[in-house]
Image 1: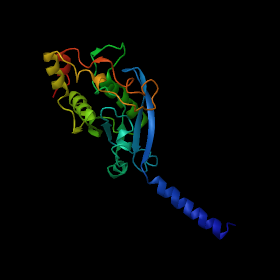
Image 2: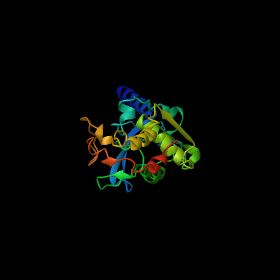
Image 3: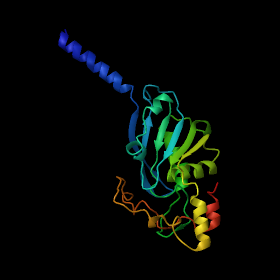
Image 4: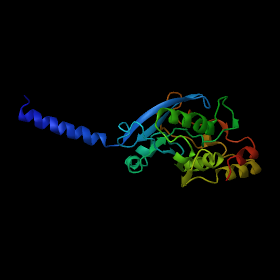
Length: 233
């Protein structure tokens, strides 16, 4: 027979477990992207009770980080409230794209693949839809971002209208492509060469994609004005 102290302890332990089960789940995940030939990490925020509702599917929001950010920035820097996933019964995915601007590069000089739009739409989205209980079509998918990520959300979202029902941008660098085209006319470099201003000591725990040098493609984002026009809006 259980004694009174043991019964009380058991009761409070059950209460604690129940309370914890009502919290959103914040976790890290990873996948291999053929489009950039890297093993990348991403953060996942699941609504409370996700693992108890074995058949319920959720809409997904992809939030893109800004320049020099990473897959943890929305949590550690922007203080994104994880409770939003429970309030709106959705899944939030925080990708990592380094300082790529989320576009398919055409002027890189480092001999590497930098198809960062493809990383999102061809590699990450199918990965998430396979691994998590998502609404796996346009009706249940949104994309947004901050600064560089705000540009990326508009550029990728508007370029792929069959994938996203809602596209939004916060303080997005929306003149990115226009600035590059103007540079091409003046024969100058700035926006079209992110390694010029992608410095700092910040590192992230992704093998071969940790330092700002590793996380910034070398060369030019776009080789021609036509390449830039593909992401203009």
